[in-house]
Image 1 (cartoon, one colour):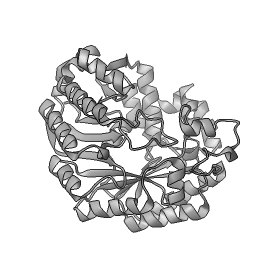
Image 2 (cartoon, rainbow, N blue to C red):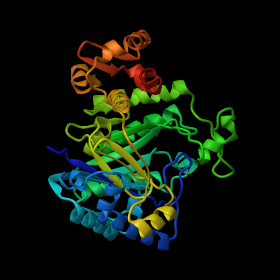
Image 3 (cartoon, rainbow, N blue to C red):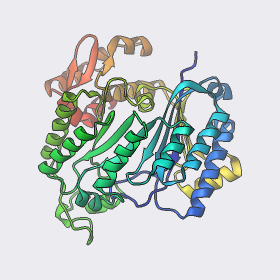
Length: 401
């Protein structure tokens, strides 16, 4: 029996580029936007060509019903709603949908109106992910966001007024200049808005981003991020850890379930699409930089928007890397993805699937991590402790040496 399939559609267009963002996204002229959307539709329509390029039988795709779709970016809500509706229609013509698919659209505050929302809903969108990030106008300017706090609040309330009952909000801890007072205000605002889902991220500094140049290793955080807006230092690690655990306590006290390191949901409102990534379920991505996993193979598309369009025009697919996962790679993925979930790894289920005992093979590592209070370990289950959430990469590395 085939597993339900997830589909990701990448829309790389933004009104402005955030200082911390390392995704394949940016500001493009309208002519590029329309050409890209045409290429994206072609890629979906010619999915058989993509599957052939990576050596997967078409039946592995066509026999699966789609039960989650995620339109991410970039800022999908910047393009006309009619384009979103058309993309979903093209997808429906290429593969069969299940009876109750979860269809998520990423939205930037201030980029929608009632007419757009109505079109989204008519097209099947039933879940919204809003990139709020913080509730201080000065910090929003500092990180390069194009919206303000009032627009963020208004956008959530407008979706609610229009009948959207599955709203997720993104928030970031550790932003430049973020104070204890700011963080308390963020938590209070989230409590008032009461979204069904919250994604809580800790700021990461990536090479090649504006923040990567400013806050690079060894550079003073006081150097700031440029003339305008004014400079600001990053909160230290202890303060960011405090923000994280304050949020965990606050969200859990309000009825949210902490189901993954960075994600919290009210009962039944977990992101069905993202859970696929963490539990090794199949998904296929369309668009520049999109990744896929099907039949034990992983592949990724060309990252450049223009090169992606050229490839689709000439060969109907844009695959630029692929691999057959080895048995070892499957095991490693099951470990580090399983540990991202707060329920952790079911050790008996793991042994049945992979044919060896995790506790026996990694006895020394488990003892070391237990002594450091980074994991909880019982004969039935291995999971991270709250302390382990903050040092998850160090935990993962112990199992991947």
